[in-house]
Image (cartoon, rainbow, N blue to C red):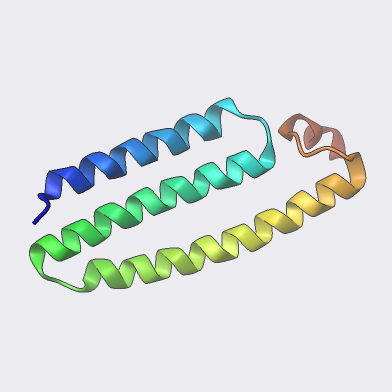
Length: 100
């Protein structure tokens, strides 16, 4: 059986990759992918804790997080399409230009 701390290390590494990707890159697609990585890192840790304490509450919470992530992806892609139609670019610097 794999120990709990291995799952937590994996989760923390994936979360850090998501944070770095979100803060460094200016491309909206990469930023949305980084947010999804962060949510999946939280899901890994919740499932690991749920399995460790033999309780299904963590796995139920993961189901709701996946649902919220799907809604976030749909809204994010709609914003992305609107930005691309107006500016022919998907960089976050172009969003400030759309004000007014």
